Image: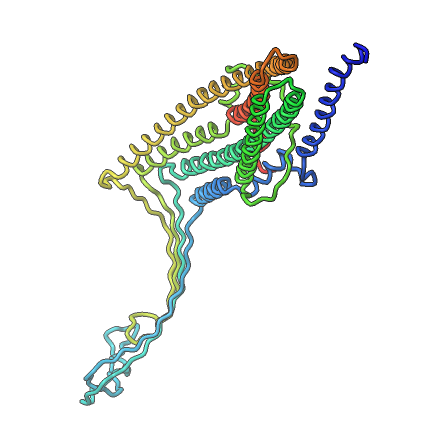
Length: 488
């Protein structure tokens, strides 16, 4: 055998064997980690948000409160209308008088004078009467009574309380409507964050699977080197431990994906929803961040909760006017009618009668045990509280926007560093593998390089999803989730 043939048999053939083993191993693990359940339906981000808005209990509560506020407006309009009441009565009674002296019908003569000469008697007239007969007994009398009546009352002045009450009710309705819009944005924000978290953990699962496959390839390569005598038994054992750890990481990552799906389904108000796929294209972002001053100015005019608080301030100021109205006089107009039929022998006058009345009344409560004065003081205190709450809400918005802006900047920088770190980690892994192959490095160097690469990829995923979630929170904080603020 020539020298060249000897070199070929010592180096080329073992290298060919290693290459064949690596190809077969990569094919096996590629088949194991192939995606499954590709026939599951896919729900886009918009689909998930719309489903969540359909049956959100929190949103339904605010909708009912808006309904109550609308009824308050109707009541305030009704204060300008008159009060109308109609009624009817019917009564039948029986009265028994005991030991009554009986009587017989008789007449009593009444003198009749000449109409032209009052002093001239022209005769007598018989007037029906009763004559006692000396008999004692019980006497029962039955009577019937029925009537129909009605009354109208219209207040024409009550210290402007009706106008202020209407304005307060309208402001309350606007506040309730703004609260509904902000609640819809909160529901959308929670669903979007859960959607991104599910994508986050799916991406981390992919990183774990890639790391596991890479560890399996390194184990096969190390075993091949061990059979060829260029690696120690300890190197193989280290790689086996590394592979088992990566398998455990895959199991943990898969469980985390399941938990993230459960969280998304819960935020969609469907905790028992069947599995579905999500759209990973929404992870694309350019990592742009706007200035804080621009975001804060926009938030003060666009945020629904700020608008709700502003309307609440208007309503409480109108309540002060309503409370002050109790210190002024009250003027009312009224009209009534009554028709009755009283079938009783004891009635004085006609059995059937009717009357109609109308007029006005003026009243002024000059002392009500300090109720009106205290009520006005309480209304003023509530108005001041509403103003303080508005000021506090504005400061909270400023702090929230600053914090979210810092989170966006931090996530953007972490994403940039992660991309550079991935390139560096890939190169370090390649060099560690090459050093181990030629005997200038150890298995530990390769394992450390693998861990660093896996961490770099995971950090990039974390930074990207953190940025997208913070961006969604910023959109809600600024008031840009207008797409979900009203019913679709």
